[in-house]
Image (cartoon, rainbow, N blue to C red; front, side, top):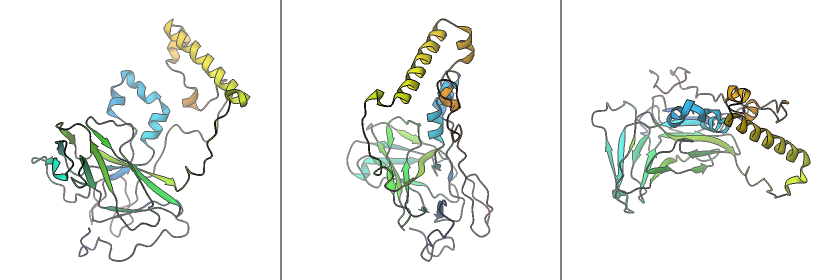
Length: 286
């Protein structure tokens, strides 16, 4: 809980977003410093390490990587689970040589048991009416021996904070987190948007236009793969098919005008008195 003697702590009810704030994501930190949150980054080490970094050619991967905001770990630590159900069965060890930050708001602990690590975030979020926040692990960032858990919170009305949790999966294995490492990914989503869909299964050729375009793409993909195999000059120069990446149809015609190759997610502007409205994750001087 926040220290109510601290001027930075909330001492009254939080006002809901006002008219014109229908796309504002509001963050109320419990402490004075700059919250350890940033627009989610596109880079992943395993993608860098792929041959010629080819993993970045997959546009759905890179768009997903940046589809929201990341919360960063406040301190470096390791965790070992002995396989038991109690919270004491998870042992956390912090790096004694790491200088402790002046303002740690993202704190790990063993709280729920059953092999989980719980991060206390020290932040209260508020979304516009009808919008939830989904919290999950960093997207497309696998971590050996531990799996991030996901949750959906109705942050448009809730005055309650929430935590980020990871489930250890291999008893006896030491799992480490580094200071500044992303430990959570936040993404707004409209409430009930999934339940509004009416899923149907239809015969493949009932949509003739879509089926024809799919067949054209399938043929071009086969020809391109054969060109690479036989070292055909054009295919080798192209390296990989870029129709989806460029937002084009299989015949080369333009696709939708709102096709996205990059996302530009805004950073949190610090509107607190005395704080500079700057990006990044470093605390501002007050």
